[in-house]
Length: 353
Image (cartoon, rainbow, N blue to C red; front, side):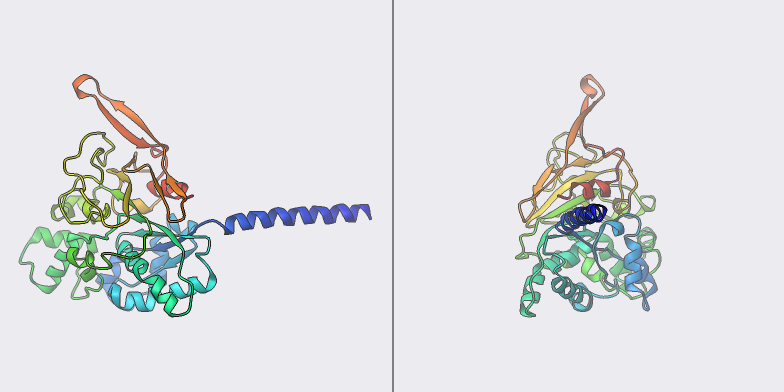
């Protein structure tokens, strides 16, 4: 009898511990992924497998740390079928399941930044009008965000429509970026044109903080950099990734620190931002695609070291200063702790409250 009582007490204790662990996990933020432009869909056309492409997009790192994905086809428009046939059904499902009751963080990449902006501007009205509870989205983590569009999209559309004129360098750059020719299948490329992108939900009512993570690396042997304004990650220029209020030849998101981490006045820094856009981490070691993978490419700096989320919790990055050279050649750099050995994406994940 005594052994049965001890066994029962042990089971009860284990159940209590597992319940506490589950409740602690369940009360944490939920991570919702919104991928960027699937260039292979643009060049191949329908039929495409949207869920399979979405799963593959995040497979190296973020897929295993996320709760929900919002997948969408590059062959459609954001304010058209992307919103009605792909975003809206997922919003309904998340509301019905109470996914964001503890708070959701949207993790976006590239054009996913634009999809998220349209979502944030409309989700509360859409769900309330359908008799459902709006989602509690406490922040977005926008990685190499294309919220300000990309000059490459302007050029790709011009090439596809035959209005760009004969320019072998331009055509080579567009082919390198997309992996093939467009052949009239424009879809979301129209939304990615700089002026068009900046018109989508330009002044959203939602006050959700949009935390920006910016790269300045090289892809395609530098072919695309010729056509992007200011510094860039080979697909998106700094004005777009930082969340600048206008397109211009900007070199950094911060007036006091370069994307390399060097502490110095930046005369070409972004001078104004879109509402609730806050650049956090910057790096000249990562490119447009390596930012979402889990490979450490080099040290990362911080334009901002902390930012409060919508519910009052704080995302924080610890930094340290490092000096190089001497006398007139002496420079000071500011880096994020552990960034030499951790990928930029892992730094983001670890910073989530």
